[in-house]
Image (cartoon, rainbow, N blue to C red; front, side, top):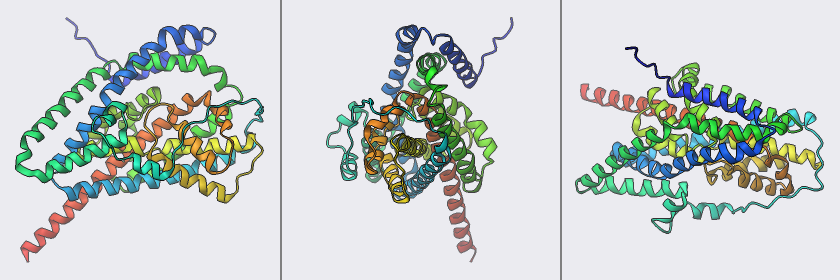
Length: 415
Protein backbone atom coordinates (compact mmCIF):
# COMPACT_ATOMS: atom_id res chain seq x y z
CA UNK A 1 0.00 0.00 0.00
CA UNK A 2 1.41 3.35 -1.07
CA UNK A 3 1.94 5.91 1.65
CA UNK A 4 0.06 9.14 1.06
CA UNK A 5 2.31 12.16 0.58
CA UNK A 6 0.98 15.11 2.55
CA UNK A 7 2.08 18.54 1.34
CA UNK A 8 3.48 20.89 4.00
CA UNK A 9 0.99 23.50 5.19
CA UNK A 10 3.07 26.31 3.67
CA UNK A 11 2.83 24.70 0.22
CA UNK A 12 -0.91 24.15 0.66
CA UNK A 13 -1.35 27.82 1.59
CA UNK A 14 0.69 28.96 -1.41
CA UNK A 15 -1.31 26.77 -3.80
CA UNK A 16 -4.54 28.11 -2.28
CA UNK A 17 -3.25 31.68 -2.76
CA UNK A 18 -2.47 31.11 -6.45
CA UNK A 19 -5.81 29.37 -7.06
CA UNK A 20 -7.61 32.19 -5.23
CA UNK A 21 -5.99 34.84 -7.45
CA UNK A 22 -6.92 32.89 -10.59
CA UNK A 23 -10.49 32.42 -9.34
CA UNK A 24 -10.72 36.12 -8.51
CA UNK A 25 -9.62 37.12 -12.01
CA UNK A 26 -12.17 34.75 -13.56
CA UNK A 27 -14.94 36.12 -11.32
CA UNK A 28 -14.29 39.82 -11.96
CA UNK A 29 -17.49 40.08 -13.93
CA UNK A 30 -19.40 38.09 -11.30
CA UNK A 31 -18.38 39.69 -8.01
CA UNK A 32 -21.73 38.74 -6.47
CA UNK A 33 -20.69 35.07 -6.58
CA UNK A 34 -17.36 35.83 -4.90
CA UNK A 35 -18.92 38.12 -2.27
CA UNK A 36 -22.05 36.08 -1.51
CA UNK A 37 -20.82 32.49 -1.71
CA UNK A 38 -17.01 32.46 -1.28
CA UNK A 39 -16.24 35.38 1.03
CA UNK A 40 -18.49 34.11 3.90
CA UNK A 41 -16.26 31.05 4.34
CA UNK A 42 -13.23 33.34 4.54
CA UNK A 43 -15.10 35.39 7.15
CA UNK A 44 -15.80 32.22 9.15
CA UNK A 45 -12.07 31.42 9.10
CA UNK A 46 -11.19 34.95 10.29
CA UNK A 47 -13.87 34.71 13.01
CA UNK A 48 -12.26 31.51 14.28
CA UNK A 49 -8.89 33.28 14.37
CA UNK A 50 -10.37 36.23 16.25
CA UNK A 51 -12.04 33.86 18.70
CA UNK A 52 -8.77 32.16 19.61
CA UNK A 53 -6.40 35.16 19.42
CA UNK A 54 -7.34 36.80 22.76
CA UNK A 55 -6.70 33.72 24.91
CA UNK A 56 -3.54 32.97 22.88
CA UNK A 57 -2.13 36.46 23.55
CA UNK A 58 -3.21 36.45 27.22
CA UNK A 59 -1.86 33.03 28.17
CA UNK A 60 1.22 33.01 25.90
CA UNK A 61 2.50 36.30 27.39
CA UNK A 62 1.76 35.14 30.95
CA UNK A 63 3.43 31.80 30.24
CA UNK A 64 6.44 33.55 28.68
CA UNK A 65 6.87 35.88 31.65
CA UNK A 66 6.43 33.09 34.21
CA UNK A 67 8.91 30.84 32.40
CA UNK A 68 11.60 33.52 32.77
CA UNK A 69 11.11 33.53 36.58
CA UNK A 70 12.85 36.91 36.70
CA UNK A 71 11.21 40.35 36.67
CA UNK A 72 14.48 42.01 35.63
CA UNK A 73 14.80 39.71 32.59
CA UNK A 74 11.26 40.54 31.47
CA UNK A 75 12.07 44.26 31.76
CA UNK A 76 15.30 43.82 29.81
CA UNK A 77 13.53 41.99 26.98
CA UNK A 78 10.62 44.45 26.90
CA UNK A 79 12.89 47.51 26.67
CA UNK A 80 14.96 45.98 23.85
CA UNK A 81 11.81 45.04 21.91
CA UNK A 82 10.11 48.44 22.28
CA UNK A 83 13.25 50.37 21.28
CA UNK A 84 13.70 48.15 18.21
CA UNK A 85 10.04 48.49 17.19
CA UNK A 86 10.06 52.28 17.53
CA UNK A 87 13.35 52.67 15.61
CA UNK A 88 12.21 50.50 12.70
CA UNK A 89 8.83 52.28 12.59
CA UNK A 90 10.61 55.65 12.33
CA UNK A 91 12.77 54.32 9.48
CA UNK A 92 9.69 52.86 7.79
CA UNK A 93 7.73 56.13 7.71
CA UNK A 94 10.81 57.93 6.32
CA UNK A 95 11.10 55.29 3.56
CA UNK A 96 7.38 55.76 2.81
CA UNK A 97 7.78 59.54 2.52
CA UNK A 98 10.88 59.24 0.32
CA UNK A 99 9.14 56.67 -1.88
CA UNK A 100 6.06 58.87 -2.17
CA UNK A 101 8.16 61.84 -3.27
CA UNK A 102 10.10 59.73 -5.81
CA UNK A 103 6.85 58.41 -7.34
CA UNK A 104 5.06 61.76 -6.97
CA UNK A 105 5.57 62.72 -10.62
CA UNK A 106 3.79 59.52 -11.69
CA UNK A 107 0.77 59.89 -9.42
CA UNK A 108 -2.45 60.32 -11.41
CA UNK A 109 -4.52 63.47 -11.17
CA UNK A 110 -7.88 62.32 -9.87
CA UNK A 111 -11.22 64.07 -9.52
CA UNK A 112 -11.47 65.04 -5.84
CA UNK A 113 -14.53 67.28 -5.75
CA UNK A 114 -17.18 64.59 -5.17
CA UNK A 115 -15.38 62.48 -2.61
CA UNK A 116 -17.26 61.28 0.44
CA UNK A 117 -15.75 59.69 3.49
CA UNK A 118 -17.06 59.15 6.99
CA UNK A 119 -14.44 60.49 9.36
CA UNK A 120 -12.78 57.83 11.47
CA UNK A 121 -12.76 58.39 15.19
CA UNK A 122 -9.39 59.67 16.32
CA UNK A 123 -7.99 60.05 19.82
CA UNK A 124 -5.33 62.25 21.39
CA UNK A 125 -1.99 60.80 22.46
CA UNK A 126 -2.89 61.07 26.16
CA UNK A 127 -6.24 59.36 25.52
CA UNK A 128 -4.29 56.55 23.86
CA UNK A 129 -2.02 56.25 26.91
CA UNK A 130 -5.01 56.17 29.28
CA UNK A 131 -6.76 53.64 27.03
CA UNK A 132 -3.88 51.19 27.39
CA UNK A 133 -4.85 50.44 30.99
CA UNK A 134 -8.04 48.40 31.56
CA UNK A 135 -10.68 49.49 34.08
CA UNK A 136 -12.42 46.13 33.98
CA UNK A 137 -11.13 42.57 33.90
CA UNK A 138 -13.58 41.26 31.31
CA UNK A 139 -14.06 44.15 28.84
CA UNK A 140 -10.56 43.87 27.22
CA UNK A 141 -11.22 40.16 26.62
CA UNK A 142 -14.72 40.74 25.20
CA UNK A 143 -13.71 43.74 23.06
CA UNK A 144 -10.40 42.15 21.98
CA UNK A 145 -8.49 45.28 23.03
CA UNK A 146 -5.00 43.84 22.53
CA UNK A 147 -3.08 46.59 24.32
CA UNK A 148 -5.21 46.13 27.44
CA UNK A 149 -4.94 42.33 27.18
CA UNK A 150 -1.13 42.65 27.05
CA UNK A 151 -1.15 44.93 30.13
CA UNK A 152 -3.34 42.40 31.96
CA UNK A 153 -1.02 39.55 31.01
CA UNK A 154 2.09 41.46 32.12
CA UNK A 155 0.59 42.47 35.49
CA UNK A 156 -0.71 38.97 36.25
CA UNK A 157 2.54 37.38 35.03
CA UNK A 158 4.63 39.63 37.30
CA UNK A 159 2.26 38.94 40.22
CA UNK A 160 2.64 35.18 39.78
CA UNK A 161 6.45 35.49 39.84
CA UNK A 162 6.42 37.71 42.94
CA UNK A 163 4.00 35.46 44.87
CA UNK A 164 6.51 32.61 44.63
CA UNK A 165 5.80 29.11 45.95
CA UNK A 166 2.11 29.78 46.63
CA UNK A 167 1.55 30.44 42.92
CA UNK A 168 2.60 26.94 41.79
CA UNK A 169 -1.02 25.82 41.09
CA UNK A 170 -1.59 29.02 39.10
CA UNK A 171 1.59 28.41 37.09
CA UNK A 172 0.47 24.89 36.23
CA UNK A 173 -3.00 26.18 35.27
CA UNK A 174 -1.63 28.94 33.03
CA UNK A 175 0.77 26.56 31.27
CA UNK A 176 -2.04 24.01 30.77
CA UNK A 177 -4.43 26.62 29.36
CA UNK A 178 -1.67 27.95 27.11
CA UNK A 179 -1.08 24.43 25.73
CA UNK A 180 -4.84 23.87 25.21
CA UNK A 181 -5.35 27.11 23.29
CA UNK A 182 -2.21 26.49 21.23
CA UNK A 183 -3.63 23.11 20.22
CA UNK A 184 -6.98 24.75 19.37
CA UNK A 185 -5.09 27.23 17.18
CA UNK A 186 -3.33 24.35 15.40
CA UNK A 187 -6.75 22.86 14.62
CA UNK A 188 -7.97 26.18 13.21
CA UNK A 189 -4.75 26.66 11.22
CA UNK A 190 -5.30 23.31 9.49
CA UNK A 191 -8.15 25.13 7.69
CA UNK A 192 -5.73 27.80 6.43
CA UNK A 193 -5.70 26.75 2.74
CA UNK A 194 -9.50 26.97 2.56
CA UNK A 195 -9.49 30.26 4.46
CA UNK A 196 -6.78 31.77 2.26
CA UNK A 197 -8.60 30.80 -0.95
CA UNK A 198 -11.91 32.25 0.30
CA UNK A 199 -10.27 35.47 1.52
CA UNK A 200 -8.16 36.25 -1.55
CA UNK A 201 -10.73 35.42 -4.24
CA UNK A 202 -13.23 38.23 -3.45
CA UNK A 203 -10.37 40.74 -3.00
CA UNK A 204 -9.11 40.11 -6.53
CA UNK A 205 -12.66 39.91 -7.93
CA UNK A 206 -13.70 43.24 -6.33
CA UNK A 207 -10.50 45.25 -6.79
CA UNK A 208 -9.00 43.79 -9.95
CA UNK A 209 -9.97 46.73 -12.13
CA UNK A 210 -8.79 49.29 -9.60
CA UNK A 211 -5.46 47.54 -9.19
CA UNK A 212 -4.62 47.89 -12.88
CA UNK A 213 -6.29 51.33 -13.12
CA UNK A 214 -5.39 54.77 -11.85
CA UNK A 215 -4.21 53.61 -8.41
CA UNK A 216 -1.67 51.12 -9.79
CA UNK A 217 1.23 53.56 -9.38
CA UNK A 218 0.37 54.19 -5.72
CA UNK A 219 0.20 50.47 -5.04
CA UNK A 220 3.52 49.88 -6.85
CA UNK A 221 5.12 52.70 -4.84
CA UNK A 222 3.93 51.19 -1.53
CA UNK A 223 5.08 47.68 -2.43
CA UNK A 224 8.50 48.90 -3.59
CA UNK A 225 8.89 50.60 -0.19
CA UNK A 226 7.72 47.45 1.60
CA UNK A 227 10.34 45.37 -0.20
CA UNK A 228 13.13 47.92 0.39
CA UNK A 229 12.35 48.09 4.11
CA UNK A 230 12.44 44.31 4.50
CA UNK A 231 15.45 43.77 2.22
CA UNK A 232 17.57 46.55 3.76
CA UNK A 233 16.42 47.25 7.33
CA UNK A 234 15.43 43.75 8.46
CA UNK A 235 18.26 42.01 6.61
CA UNK A 236 20.83 44.36 8.17
CA UNK A 237 19.30 44.05 11.64
CA UNK A 238 19.03 40.24 11.54
CA UNK A 239 22.54 39.87 10.09
CA UNK A 240 24.28 42.22 12.55
CA UNK A 241 22.22 42.08 15.76
CA UNK A 242 20.55 38.70 15.27
CA UNK A 243 23.62 36.76 14.18
CA UNK A 244 21.65 35.02 11.43
CA UNK A 245 22.00 34.83 7.65
CA UNK A 246 19.23 37.08 6.22
CA UNK A 247 18.55 34.63 3.36
CA UNK A 248 17.98 31.82 5.85
CA UNK A 249 15.73 34.11 7.88
CA UNK A 250 13.47 34.96 4.94
CA UNK A 251 13.40 31.36 3.71
CA UNK A 252 12.22 30.03 7.08
CA UNK A 253 9.87 32.98 7.55
CA UNK A 254 8.13 32.44 4.18
CA UNK A 255 5.10 30.46 5.47
CA UNK A 256 4.20 33.27 7.88
CA UNK A 257 4.64 35.86 5.10
CA UNK A 258 2.28 33.95 2.79
CA UNK A 259 -0.29 33.57 5.55
CA UNK A 260 -0.04 37.28 6.47
CA UNK A 261 -0.39 38.33 2.82
CA UNK A 262 -3.65 36.45 2.41
CA UNK A 263 -5.21 37.09 5.83
CA UNK A 264 -4.07 40.73 6.35
CA UNK A 265 -4.02 40.09 10.09
CA UNK A 266 -0.87 40.49 12.19
CA UNK A 267 -2.62 39.04 15.22
CA UNK A 268 -4.11 36.16 13.23
CA UNK A 269 -0.66 35.26 11.90
CA UNK A 270 0.80 34.95 15.43
CA UNK A 271 0.76 31.12 15.63
CA UNK A 272 2.40 30.64 12.21
CA UNK A 273 4.93 33.36 13.02
CA UNK A 274 5.64 31.76 16.41
CA UNK A 275 6.30 28.37 14.85
CA UNK A 276 8.70 29.90 12.32
CA UNK A 277 10.63 31.83 14.99
CA UNK A 278 11.07 28.71 17.12
CA UNK A 279 12.36 26.80 14.08
CA UNK A 280 14.86 29.62 13.50
CA UNK A 281 16.20 29.10 17.02
CA UNK A 282 14.50 31.90 18.94
CA UNK A 283 14.00 31.27 22.66
CA UNK A 284 10.46 30.09 23.43
CA UNK A 285 9.91 32.42 26.40
CA UNK A 286 11.11 35.44 24.44
CA UNK A 287 9.00 34.46 21.43
CA UNK A 288 5.89 34.14 23.62
CA UNK A 289 6.43 37.68 24.91
CA UNK A 290 7.86 39.63 21.97
CA UNK A 291 5.56 38.42 19.15
CA UNK A 292 2.21 39.35 20.77
CA UNK A 293 3.73 42.69 21.79
CA UNK A 294 4.87 43.31 18.21
CA UNK A 295 1.51 42.31 16.74
CA UNK A 296 0.01 45.19 18.73
CA UNK A 297 2.57 48.02 18.62
CA UNK A 298 4.89 47.23 15.67
CA UNK A 299 3.38 48.72 12.52
CA UNK A 300 6.27 49.27 10.09
CA UNK A 301 4.23 48.33 7.02
CA UNK A 302 1.39 50.56 8.17
CA UNK A 303 3.85 53.44 8.71
CA UNK A 304 5.15 53.06 5.13
CA UNK A 305 1.54 53.10 3.91
CA UNK A 306 0.88 56.35 5.83
CA UNK A 307 3.85 58.08 4.19
CA UNK A 308 2.98 57.00 0.65
CA UNK A 309 -0.73 57.83 1.02
CA UNK A 310 -0.05 61.21 2.65
CA UNK A 311 2.10 62.28 -0.32
CA UNK A 312 -0.44 60.85 -2.79
CA UNK A 313 -3.43 62.59 -1.18
CA UNK A 314 -1.52 65.86 -0.86
CA UNK A 315 -0.59 65.68 -4.56
CA UNK A 316 -4.21 65.05 -5.58
CA UNK A 317 -5.28 68.17 -3.65
CA UNK A 318 -2.41 70.23 -5.04
CA UNK A 319 -0.62 70.53 -1.67
CA UNK A 320 3.16 70.46 -1.33
CA UNK A 321 4.27 69.09 2.05
CA UNK A 322 7.35 70.86 3.44
CA UNK A 323 10.02 69.36 5.71
CA UNK A 324 8.17 70.37 8.90
CA UNK A 325 5.00 68.67 7.68
CA UNK A 326 6.93 65.49 6.88
CA UNK A 327 8.58 65.48 10.32
CA UNK A 328 5.12 65.87 11.85
CA UNK A 329 3.95 62.86 9.85
CA UNK A 330 6.94 60.84 11.14
CA UNK A 331 6.20 61.55 14.82
CA UNK A 332 2.44 61.16 14.42
CA UNK A 333 2.81 57.81 12.68
CA UNK A 334 5.14 56.49 15.40
CA UNK A 335 2.77 57.50 18.20
CA UNK A 336 -0.34 56.39 16.31
CA UNK A 337 1.18 52.94 15.72
CA UNK A 338 0.97 52.26 19.47
CA UNK A 339 -2.80 52.12 19.34
CA UNK A 340 -3.30 50.56 15.92
CA UNK A 341 -4.72 47.04 16.24
CA UNK A 342 -3.25 44.21 14.16
CA UNK A 343 -6.45 43.46 12.24
CA UNK A 344 -7.57 44.26 8.66
CA UNK A 345 -8.55 47.88 7.99
CA UNK A 346 -7.35 49.43 11.27
CA UNK A 347 -4.86 51.65 9.39
CA UNK A 348 -7.69 53.95 8.26
CA UNK A 349 -7.87 55.44 11.75
CA UNK A 350 -4.09 55.88 11.77
CA UNK A 351 -4.19 57.55 8.33
CA UNK A 352 -6.90 59.92 9.56
CA UNK A 353 -4.61 60.94 12.45
CA UNK A 354 -1.68 61.52 10.08
CA UNK A 355 -3.72 63.62 7.63
CA UNK A 356 -5.21 65.70 10.45
CA UNK A 357 -1.75 66.39 11.88
CA UNK A 358 -0.65 68.16 8.66
CA UNK A 359 -3.99 69.76 7.75
CA UNK A 360 -4.86 67.53 4.79
CA UNK A 361 -8.59 66.87 4.19
CA UNK A 362 -9.84 63.58 5.60
CA UNK A 363 -11.96 63.15 2.47
CA UNK A 364 -8.73 62.20 0.74
CA UNK A 365 -8.86 58.81 2.46
CA UNK A 366 -11.64 57.91 0.00
CA UNK A 367 -8.98 57.97 -2.74
CA UNK A 368 -7.22 54.93 -1.29
CA UNK A 369 -9.97 53.28 0.78
CA UNK A 370 -11.26 51.27 -2.19
CA UNK A 371 -8.03 49.31 -2.52
CA UNK A 372 -6.98 49.44 1.13
CA UNK A 373 -7.21 45.65 1.34
CA UNK A 374 -4.53 45.38 -1.36
CA UNK A 375 -2.27 47.78 0.58
CA UNK A 376 -3.10 45.84 3.73
CA UNK A 377 -1.84 42.51 2.42
CA UNK A 378 1.66 43.89 1.82
CA UNK A 379 1.91 45.99 4.96
CA UNK A 380 0.86 43.03 7.12
CA UNK A 381 3.75 41.01 5.67
CA UNK A 382 6.12 43.83 6.67
CA UNK A 383 4.60 44.08 10.16
CA UNK A 384 4.92 40.39 11.02
CA UNK A 385 8.41 40.18 9.47
CA UNK A 386 9.45 43.00 11.81
CA UNK A 387 8.02 41.03 14.74
CA UNK A 388 9.99 37.92 13.75
CA UNK A 389 13.23 39.86 13.24
CA UNK A 390 12.85 41.42 16.71
CA UNK A 391 12.37 37.99 18.26
CA UNK A 392 15.54 36.65 16.63
CA UNK A 393 17.53 39.77 17.62
CA UNK A 394 16.37 39.89 21.25
CA UNK A 395 17.01 36.14 21.65
CA UNK A 396 20.55 36.56 20.33
CA UNK A 397 21.27 39.61 22.51
CA UNK A 398 19.94 37.87 25.64
CA UNK A 399 22.09 34.79 24.91
CA UNK A 400 25.18 36.98 24.53
CA UNK A 401 24.31 38.79 27.75
CA UNK A 402 23.91 35.48 29.61
CA UNK A 403 27.18 34.12 28.16
CA UNK A 404 29.04 37.29 29.15
CA UNK A 405 27.63 37.12 32.67
CA UNK A 406 28.57 33.44 32.95
CA UNK A 407 32.12 34.14 31.72
CA UNK A 408 32.48 36.98 34.24
CA UNK A 409 31.29 34.77 37.11
CA UNK A 410 33.72 32.04 36.08
CA UNK A 411 36.57 34.55 35.97
CA UNK A 412 35.72 35.77 39.47
CA UNK A 413 35.67 32.18 40.77
CA UNK A 414 39.07 31.45 39.16
CA UNK A 415 40.54 34.54 40.77
